Image (cartoon, rainbow, N blue to C red; front, side, top):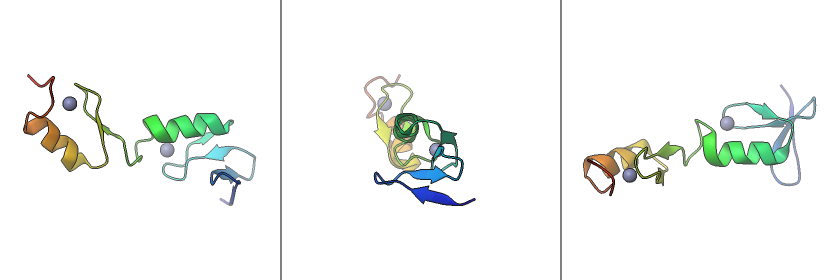
Length: 76
Ligand SMILES: [Zn+2]
Ligand SMILES: [Zn+2]
């Protein structure tokens, strides 16, 4: 698959869709792709979210530590 990169640094596939460079999901709109990368991409660097307080972490180990060390305010 050949991708182009637009002026904002987003990948665009040959058929004109905006493509997530992490998981290769594609979207018709750049704003949708942006939302995907920031909030829901499974490979996003900020994807590790505490289910209790919704803090996000870059690494799974950070999230584990957050929960296990009971730093999480909502941990019970
Ligand atoms: Zn993705
Ligand atoms: Zn938490």
